[in-house]
Image (cartoon, rainbow, N blue to C red; front, side, top):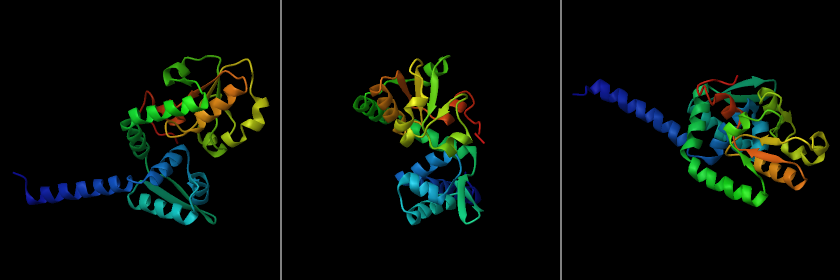
Length: 217
C-alpha cells in the first residue's frame, strides 16, 4: 500500500509536470522554443522573428524560464535566452511528432499552393551532388548547419538568385515541419527555373536522426 510520503512525492511530481504542460499550451511559447532550438537569441531578436512586442515576448520567456525550460544570461545591455538542456529540444521535437499527421496535411496543402516539390530526409541524405540551401537567419546557420550548405536567408533569396547554380538540384531547408520558408523558397526557385526540392526537416532533425539524444552545441 502506498505510504503518505510516497503519495506526497508522486503528487508533487505530477504537479511539476503539469506546470510544464501548461507552459507548453501556448502557440507563441512553442514558437519561441523552436527558435531557441536553432541557437541562443536575445529578447529583441526573438521579438522580431515572432513579430511580437518585446514586452509580450519577455512575458512568454518568463513563463518558460519559471517552468525550467530556458535559461538566460546578460550580454551587455541585452538578455540572451537558450534552452536549459538537450531534453527540452527533444520535448519540442516530440510534440511535433505527435502532431505529424496533421502537420503533413497542412504542409501538403502549402506545397500545392506554392508549387514546391518535397524530398524526404532519407532521400536528401542519399544525394551526392545536390546543393543544400539553408534559408534560416545567419545566426542560426552559424550555430550549426548541414555540411557544405549555402546560407541565403529567405528574405534575401530573390535578390541573390545569381549565387545559385542552374545545373544542380537544390535542396532547401529551414527550421523543420513548423516552418513555411522551405516550401515558399522552393516554390520561388521552381518558378525561376531551378530544380529545387523542399526538405521539411531541420538541422536538428538531420544530426539527431541516428542519435536522438545528441545536443547540438
